[in-house]
Length: 317
Image (cartoon, rainbow, N blue to C red; front, side, top):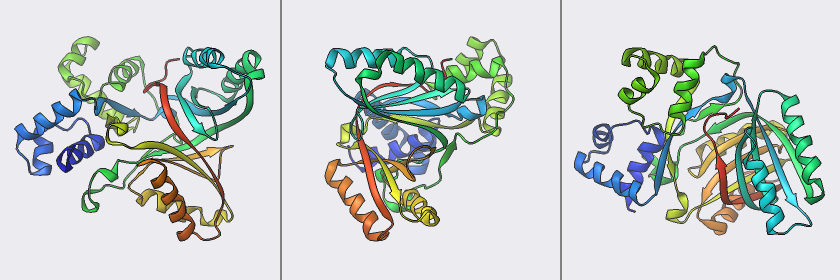
């Protein structure tokens, strides 16, 4: 990869529905050059898909999180536990991790009662293998773009905020549209209108309404950061003075490697996710935080994502 590839990825990460013509105009490149580069990025699985960012809270869902630390297990037992979690329709994501926990699991549920029932059933089966667990609920989940791909003048620090909105009105046709485009934001309007038996004009109108209601927040690229030697870190901070929380939020927002801010109930004071060039960059980030905010950070925990078993883009249940 070179700087041109990174700029193209950045543009697709911001809006994966941009045409080759639009990207070539923004980057002042020939259309043939952009088309060839995108094809190479896709064939090499550096870009391995495109998805639609949907605000699940506006569909009546909340995101619950469970951290698990194992005890008294072997690989076979851990595989059974992971498969159990993967087969739950409420499971949003399952990560194998190293650091503060062994597994990080997200659940999309419609109520606290539903979430509690899921946790009880899980513990009835596997509690003896759980050394420690931590349960939390997402209040807000803010997504940032991969600003580390480009030089500072090209960066975009706006974010996509999910999880804190009131439920919006939608119908079964809207649900079918969202299901279909959730895993492929490069959808063809013609093919989609045929599949859903809608006119192109009716489909365009509905998608625009879903965007207006901010049920659809954006269209992004799935990028394999490991192909260019980056790793995924989740960092949780406990801080001394909560009145200075906004200073940390501004720091995270302006940091080019920070991809997510997680605002949770039951979690840490401040949580964020970053893609970094290994442990050296991770510790540099921690040192930078301590230097910029002396005495503020009481302690920190982290995990590094080792393997993603599941990640869904639209609720299954």
